Image 1 (cartoon, one colour):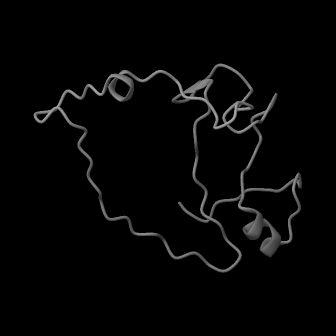
Image 2 (cartoon, rainbow, N blue to C red):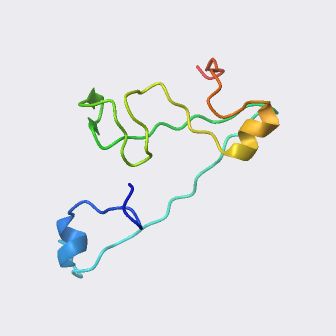
Length: 100
């Protein structure tokens, strides 16, 4: 991640502009998404993948995409949201679910 502009992993369809579709082009679709209404002071949790992870199998503790080393107990929150909730960078928090 220290490289200017980041880095790109090899990806044949993108690199070779080869798309196995009827038109030979990339096809995109958009589906409507209904964002759930959240009570004040609540955030919606979204999981993500790191480079050293495939589905639920974790091969390493580093996330070089985001500059996180030697750990997986990390929650990324927008600075404005954290400030509104009274949290500072590096604070420890408890995550609980209201959804069943």
